[in-house]
Image (cartoon, rainbow, N blue to C red; front, side, top):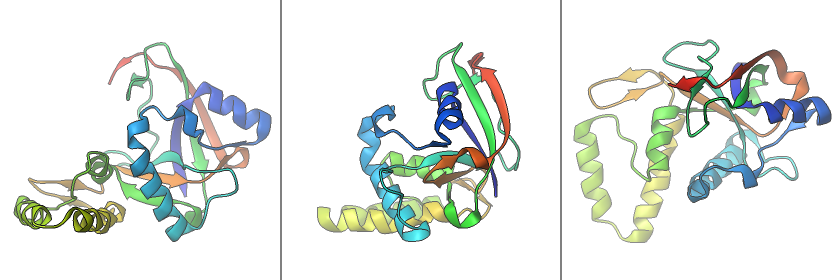
Length: 190
């Protein structure tokens, strides 16, 4: 499948020099999110197979943005990347069986340690049930609920939007996956 990954220019240089890029855990911008990345890595192991030796976390890419299967808009600042920063957008082709797709909005709920719900009524019922559980059972309930992040079918209502923006994770980015390269400099706020 064709995906798009936006990375710092140094990632492209690594690809050219070594032929591959893997996520460097030391470069994680928000270390407090490690438990959620660990959970996702465990899900990837179950769903697409274990990571190669030396790989702990996935490479991230976009499958769909705002309902479109096309290269994301580039050049704007996002997630703390500053103006003037040298970046690349790579169009890549990754075998389907080596990719795990997930809903970006639902992933944001996981990163906020919440429960994924499709309606306000369901949210109220799940929250009430969650609060009635022991801490151990709350943990178990969350992990089961988070499986919903992998539902990427389109749903849009007053409470949630699902399937509009779909992210992709895979273990290793190799130079033979590259189909197109766009270099850009971050120019301002998105």
